[in-house]
Length: 135
Image (tube, rainbow, N blue to C red):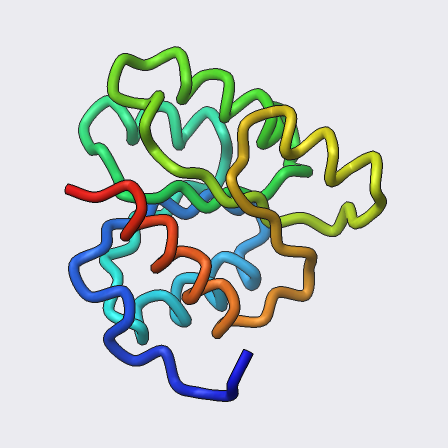
């Protein structure tokens, strides 16, 4: 991927970011906001489900390994919501093995990024998923 700034690539895209580690959450949020996204944060899977009662994001970006409920639990809950079936989801994880990638795809995530996340790659993936999901 060419080295380019993602400024504006996420203009008008609403992202629900779910990450239990504050520093990682802030870095991911800052990158997507720089690219123009409106980012709603949740510090846990359960908090994200509560947020989804009042908003419908264009894209869900979620950590997989979190305390209590994990990203797999979250995606099952999201897909159970009537409007949640069409929200594209990106898994962000330290799990990088082939079995982990297979489990992530089988769970219904459309993309996966391994930590540490390249902010430009994250923005490109989120932009692509938002365009495919359409209005």
